[in-house]
Length: 398
Image 1 (tube, rainbow, N blue to C red):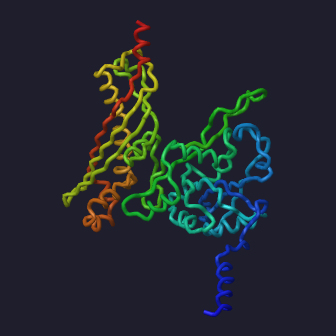
Image 2 (image 1 turned 45 degrees about the vertical axis):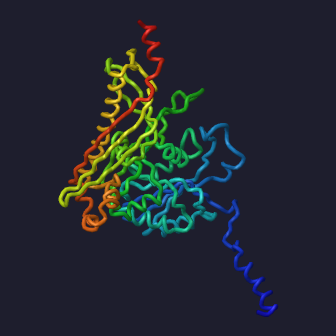
Image 3 (image 1 turned 45 degrees about the horizontal axis):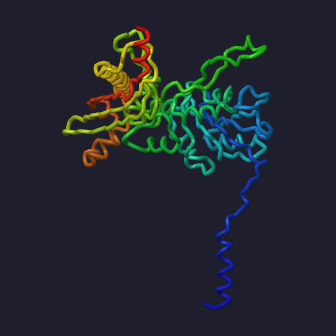
């Protein structure tokens, strides 16, 4: 290679590796998306709703703390319709003077009517669209998604931020877009997503605010259950807890049980850790799952005055805690198998891993096989600390 050609190559290669900046936008040119919602319109079109940050409200900070009682709206909620999600988003962009930026989007809320019709086209768009993130939280609203995005939070700056914190704190089931899409594509499970709705909560108190009506705040109130890509029903918060136990996704939380010797008094137990093991069996006719759940708890609160440090009382507390978890799991399983006929527990994936040959035959009718499968649940609880305060309080009261 001649010296001239080598020099030319040295000049061209760095230029090819340099990133272009023609698609770059300055901050003052961006309309930052904080939350998105998708609804079905009465004329069978798709309505997309975006919660956008108002730059003037975020600039220079806010009052101390979170977003309590801002003097101005710090978000702008705007909606537009189209025959597809992309068309609705493009029509919406024509109303916004800035470039719509999805990099800070926290949540995607799918309206109930839209979810019952089918969500594959919704998740497909958000997974393919290069401007959105696959780590946003997916939720299903009881009613219109638009209404949730129009609400505001008394503690956080925006309702989208508030919902994001609820999901991250594991107030219920938590599902990212990428995991939701994987469940849609899988034959061994079906999607599930947190149910969110507006609930009336206490209004802020202070001088001149005594007559203020209760404030509506977004809350996680259960789980939306899907069969393939269609919403078919709901689990309440107790059944959702059972779902999490069966999926091995319980990380923390509490269990409230009656005190063994004083059943009119209650005990509060804090879950320290838990483990779920699912063992599939198949004899050529019957699909069977043996589910083993074990967990450890600490005594966090005691209303009774009895001594809970004896082996008999410790055993009674452990049995009551195990029964509570067993009941929640049974309720969730009964509803999924009997009422909805859909596997949202990832049991099909467990069966696939162990019985690969048989799975080739069963995977095309897995929901039907799951609906009639035998599921045996065994729960074991261990009380780590019953607490010395109990004994001292009992002796003092005597």
